[in-house]
Amino acid sequence: MKPESMGLSAARLAKLDEVMTGRYVDGGLLPGILTQVYRRGRLVHTGMSGHMDIERGKKMREDAIFRIYSMTKPITSVALMMLVEEGKLGLDDDVATHIPSFKNLGVYASGVPTLLANAPPSFITTQPERAMKVVDLVTHTSGLTYGFMMRTSVDAAYRKLKINDFQTPGGLDTFIEQLSSVPLEFSPGTAWNYSVSIDVMGYLVQKLSGMTFGDFLRTRLFEPLGMVDTAFYVPPEKLDRFTSCYQPASATGPGLKVQDDAGKSTYAEPPTLESGGGGLVSTAHDYMRFCRMMLGGGTLEGTQILSPKTVELFSLNHLPRNQELADMAPPGLFSEAGYSGIGFSIGCGVNINVAKTRLPGTLGEYFWGGAASTAFWIDPQEDLAVVFMTQVMGTDARLTLRRDLRTLVYSAMTESYA
Image 1 (spheres, rainbow, N blue to C red):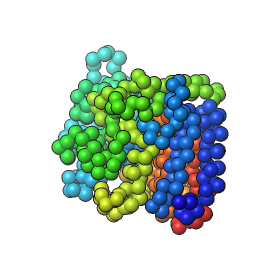
Image 2 (image 1 turned 60 degrees about the horizontal axis):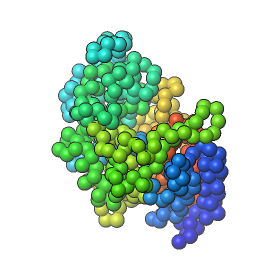
Image 3 (image 1 turned 30 degrees about the horizontal axis):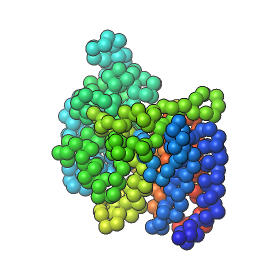
Image 4 (image 1 turned 45 degrees about the horizontal axis):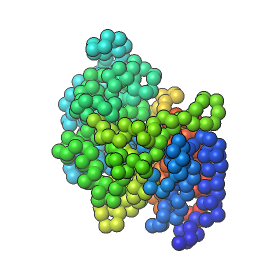
């Protein structure tokens, strides 16, 4: 099957591989890459180069298993929306309806985490302007944060308590107890802050389904969709396919060093806390099956996960007053996306102003990425899905490689439907 029959140029897809390999793999910024492009019902391109494990001399392979980190978030969002469709909760519900301990959460006013090892944080708080809604979790407007932000005293409290640690004793239940003891960064709905909100959604899925979060994902999503290599850990029989993860060897130039060795990784054992915000491993094949289900209006090969109307919500901006991330995010905030022209849908960024992004794209396309530089996007109007896998943490090239990937994929189009 030629890409031309699906409205794509084979020569330009070859250029995609050439540029990404030359600039990022041969340039010493990435160990290896794996790219899949799906359009009009067909996987029209798979490109790969470099290594999945440099130290062991293992070349990239199509069935390699990657840490997908925040690309877990859209999967958790789909799980939550499955329960919305079942009437278990609604996006406009107060979160405290389902998590009573959140009812008394105040907004940070002053104070710092105490330095005493076992003492609780000492904060002065004010009442939020309104209650936190489920939609605030979905859009990262909840007032929650991440400890790695290194910006505020609330962030510091998250680090002190090790909130969202994959090895937290008591798992998601303890995680919720910890969150209930720390104030919000801001009143829900008034700002956008990348956070553990999606992990809270994982807890809601667990509580409302009566299953562990991992069992829900396995039995309700992964097994029905044939996502056979997606889980919260890598079992022994699959470790030979697990990638090593890297980080820049220096701050001033190319070169990589091991960040998480595949042969010694904590991912070889089930975690105590099943993180809906960043805990999954997967393959390009599996993640593309997830994308294909969404591109198919919630159904893949006869298996329905969501209704088409629910899937359409992922292409809409759910930020208050249709604002962009640029309008709501504090300066310098970490994100897996640029801000201009981007809104936020259900656990994903969404394109709401193509011109402002300064990149080719389509209104309503939704996307996200992971901390190890992985990325995906789904463009319903163009009947297109792209999955990009690699494994490098902390690289400044993360956003530029996604820019180049997007530009090169859209440049390969010979037909547009938008």
